[in-house]
Image (cartoon, rainbow, N blue to C red; front, side):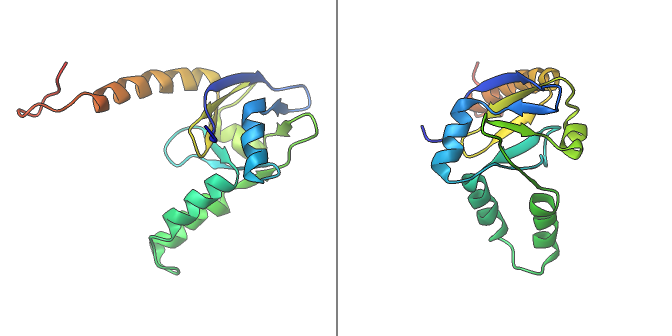
Length: 153
């Protein structure tokens, strides 16, 4: 697997830095991205993060819209205008900006959650709630639909 997988919870140090999981750093290094590209998630109270793979997915999404259209401008603002590029120190730590910390409700710890081409950074308790909902929805998606509109149990 060449993408971001698994989840890790790490403490924020007294200088406001957090260690990016080693396996995530390896993906970023293979990807050729020096640091992290981050922005407030459009759908969750979390931070979306990644490297060149994430930027490629954003470009694919934006290419569906003509430049100079309202749709393109809104998405460009959400993906680029609200984004931050974080630099990793030699020990693999990043300092999350106050804007990202406030958006995600992060205080003392963060949970990193792999999602293939990107990962998310969560406040741990919020993540556990999201994980429970994600498991519930994934199970419902996996069950085949019955002809009467219900799902097979």
